[in-house]
Image (cartoon, rainbow, N blue to C red; front, side, top):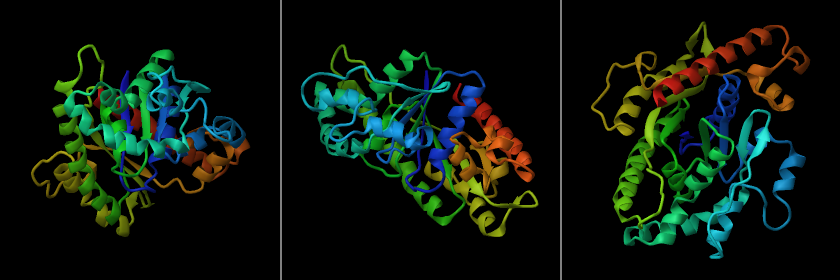
Length: 323
């Protein structure tokens, strides 16, 4: 099973919607998919599940059957990691998010330096997300795990990224995404190097994640178009994305003159589908599954077809790049 994390330390770029739609598209293509919600805001879970179903995972007191539940015995000092629960949503397996994940941050921060001492519990805590994803994937014989994480550079995301083979970066064509990318690349390399430094200290007999975190590429999200070209306000920032990505994420020399269209690292440019998204949220389905009964009539019909082609092509590109 390949594990791909979708990560940007700037919020609001459409990262969770991207994970949600790719999970459906890969499932449509016959893949066995696990979607893991490691964002403490649990936005991915709210896209997949109705509120009454979500409420059953988050009762008063401790949540149950969430991504955090199997880790709690380890955190409480009462045992190891238990078998995770996987919620089945049609053909997709979901590790349900947990608002209490934010309370895991301090423990992850405290155990990170202890790995350098070869501390067994430290390695179990840092590798907890990877173990939960591995067990959940094995449970449903998943081909691919798609991991949604929150928009920050904290210890939770470090542990989530250690669980990932590859990292996809969703970007908005704006100043804030570019500035965020300048922070994201060096941090990702620092995490990778830090984990590589700790791996030789792994206690004998322990299975821990490799922490590859290989950058797979970026996706330009929700750029407005006019006559099939980005509007001027967005085009200005799109011109700067390739150089910033290659320099910050890949530590490569200047890529002056390289456009998004010609950049191999650009996995896709996804348009703003405007009214399709609220329609899809109301229908509790991906945009490319909308039918006339959901309100997709008139010009929406062509928009739905275009959306399907875009995500189909993106899924194929990710498959090729991750192979």
